[in-house]
Amino acid sequence: MHVLFCAILFYLCCYGEARLWSKGVVHYAINSKDYDLHSQDIIVSTLKKLESEICVKFFSTPFNHTLADDARILYVSNPDKRKDCPPEDYSFDKTVVDIHIGYKCLNDDDISRKIMEMLRASIGDKDYKPNSVDLYKTFQAVKKKDLRTNSLLMPSDRDLINTYYLQECGELTQKPISGRRWYAGKTMELNSDNEKFYNDKLWPFGIVMYDFDKKSTASDIKKLEDAMKVIEHASCIVFQRISEDRALQPRNLLYFGAQGEAVPNLGFIEGNQSVLLSSMLTGAPGHSAHTLSLLMRVLGIPMMSNRYDRSSHIQVNWNNVARMNEHYLERLPKEAWVRDIEGEGTAYDFDSVTHAPANYMCTDCSRGQQTVTPIQDYLWQRTLSMGHRTDLSPADMEMLSLLYSKYCQVRFVKNAKK
Ligand SMILES: *[C@@H]1O[C@H](CO)[C@@H](O)[C@H](O)[C@H]1NC(C)=O
Ligand SMILES: *[C@@H]1O[C@H](CO)[C@@H](O)[C@H](O)[C@H]1NC(C)=O
Image 1 (cartoon, rainbow, N blue to C red):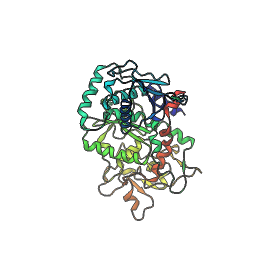
Image 2 (tube, rainbow, N blue to C red; image 1 turned 90 degrees about the vertical axis):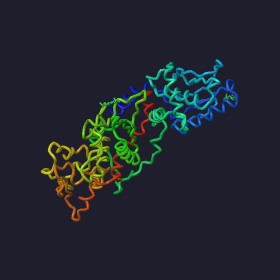
Image 3 (cartoon, helix red, strand yellow; image 1 turned 180 degrees about the vertical axis):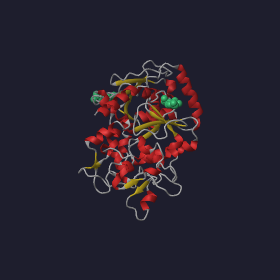
Image 4 (spheres, helix red, strand yellow; image 1 turned 120 degrees about the horizontal axis):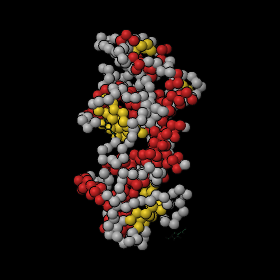
């Protein structure tokens, strides 16, 4: 509960007040006295086009329609018979949010700009200044440059809205949570000790913010982002890169570059964590699961080979372990060990993407020495396959789902309103 509370605080401080359109749906009405049928059509069609770029939906709703208590309606009108549509201030205190679109602004670009401005206000973007003429000009300049693409919104704006509306739009809950069931037919469960161990290690809402140092090469960026996609496809986790031109900068992020920690923190940590990009990408020779394993670590998932009961399954040859790295091979406390509903240990998973390879953290394993040796492995199969996965094992997926499902599904606005 404590973590949930912190998570809400975290979002409150960054998102401002709770103004998001509930469930990502903007109910709107157009004043039919201010706009003729043709003009109304233009507005409706622009809103439809925007739906293909952002997850927010626009539902036309009769103005006198009785909405649910906390629902709002966006009212498009032009009471002053304006021609233009300068930036304006939006009030989300009442059930009606006014937006004014002048006659000369009845085109895709201007309507999109106004809608974007309103959505920015809805996420509580405090740095956004409604009267800044500069911002308006910048927008126009970028728009012109971007003409070759058909998109109405700048990528950074699109990302911004999609990130902040991720929960409301319910995108996460629509993602299939595969690997729900443990292959032995037993479902893992968190006991209270597990919760204590993991709670402060989880990223709020399952969203990991990150950025790259400007000097990072495109191929390095791609390698890391490809690994992120593997995890995204197997879980409800989202890795979100922040961009420079975004007004809102997250307070907690991973910053990959030429400096920083070789091994990221186990789980969430507040602030700007610098991580060495090269060490995210390159592990022991042949350790193909290396990057995925470190990303799992970022998410708070420790290595299988460090599990409390690992000594029944593997042996660590301490003499071969590189000095100062011993702690990466230490056995974890019992609280980190997640068991099934009957309190029994689930099968030890040699296939886990988080399992160490046989040459993990080795001083010199070039002649076949090992740091990690399976206890029973007559045909060398385990020795050869450990740490060589390129995707998550069913148990890895189950673990992520167990720890994160609830975080991914939290509707923060509902909670924040209380
Ligand atoms: C809502 O307004 C329309 C006309 O704009 C009218 O025909 C309809 O009866 C109104 N409905 C209610 C519930 O007042
Ligand atoms: C994070 O830290 C790096 C390096 O210290 C810095 O270059 C970057 O701008 C920081 N990012 C944010 C969003 O604070």
